Image (tube, rainbow, N blue to C red; front, top):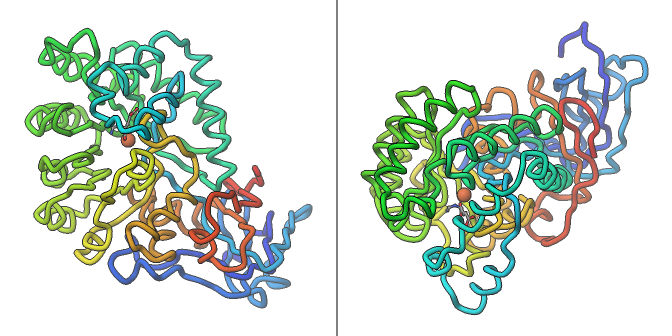
Length: 420
Ligand code: NIG
Ligand code: FE
């Protein structure tokens, strides 16, 4: 504990303080290690965690600044702020009709091929101005924050023209400045081939490579480049070309891959040293081995499988056993997974992917921090880390998957400030 610093916020009487202190990333059986302190206390100084320990170690021991806020957690669970490492929050309109069509038996790809899906969101986004987009996206961020999420990765990808992709990334940039949630921006111009290039996909790929990527980099609007690498969208060869251009331009890589079928996307992502590869429901054995070797984070999205009415979930157990870094995210988007709740994702991970509650919590905190390359500042309640904290209305962390479909968050603290 730094002696000269005083606490500006003190949380006492914490039944289970989940610090996540420990190995980063959490691999294999270490995923069950929550750095848990029973009867804990936590002190914050300014924007940083000052001290964590048992109540006895913190209360009356840490010097309090004048006007220090004291919260009595009443024996509740406290965790790090949650990190949602895969979201598509910038869109103009919801697509509830498609959800119902899928429930009635139409497939995601059938709807896409008939002009619905991503392409319909593209038409809507192009027609909306930046203020309209900000308004709708802000609503999404407010719901995320209320559900305990304090950092998200946020993608463009419903513009699919240079102008509309830049408009989307500017929405992300603006909201990052005004909203308590931190947004990590990703350029997803290769999300789909837009209507006007359906007969000339090569020309669209050229525009992504020669116009969009250079402009996005020049304007400093994205840290990552992502792609929908899937049969019927961008195949492995096209994906390699686009992602190599992004890498050469200085962006780091994330992939949507092996979501609806196995196409070698995980192997490609690993071979290109991607930071993450996401979905991977149909990942091959070779793909799993490759990810374990390169340390590419597997971001699993069970909410998408659920909302698409799928029967097959990503093989989380095989990946964990093989030593892959596993994170979990919402994939929040208007098509395949419309939720802001990481809580429901944890329920699905436990029930459908046979993860333990502790593994799932590791996957939305410390491993999700790895997925946005911020594991040295967020994802843990360790002295010196950013004070992003959630207080929950539960006495035991195992209630998080068990008590499903309701929001158990009572308070959210972002950079030391109580924001919920
Ligand atoms: O991650 N798979 C590709 N992209 C999104 C879905 C986008 C949409 O349907 O609007 C996803 O599932
Ligand atoms: Fe996605």
